[in-house]
Image (cartoon, rainbow, N blue to C red):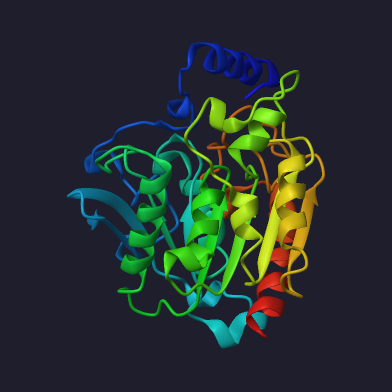
Length: 314
């Protein structure tokens, strides 16, 4: 989102008393039949390791779509041998639905972890409406579902872009759930800072949105191992957001770390040489990446393993 667009939206909201929370979501509906995870979307993963279903959420009667992929233990780094049951709960970005992010699920599956990804209400096959409160309920429901699966073990909460807000919430005391570590990638620190960084106008985010997403403020109260990753060429969510989240958490745990990925944009983090204008889909699974791109992915895997070894070993 450009600074000019945000600035215009801020002015419209402030002068016309229009709330623009809807601009934070961009979910695309889909039926369960449109998710063919046994072929092109998650090719390389045997169908018998993939579970896709609707589960109830909250007290509204709504359902969310969850996708659980059981790990391939042979892919797990030997340094994590003592934690074979690591499960990643992955919260995706604001656009489209899970179909746009399955390649990111593939990143985590390629590291030998169980992975659970889900669609927020209003996205894909999930019913109901998207809101900040509902997103937090959705990630808790996803967690509770994951805990019913065999071999889940240690839970790591991971969020990309908007999903970082849900990932951080799951790690907070507010969620009432037990999580071992948190990883956020290309995540904004708060709606207030998004408004502030629009430039030219000194308006608070609350002037044009009821939604807060005070991710940095919530993260400051989390003493779990916490990793922040942000691309230096991210024009959608400036790296300053990642820096602010890092400033909030860096003293909270000795394993915490911040990776500024040089040259990475919002869309191609963590593989900065991937030249794309949109979320990459040409390579839907890591082992399809050309050698030079896979080398960057391998570096990313190393960061994750080092972080988890340090964090989960405490």
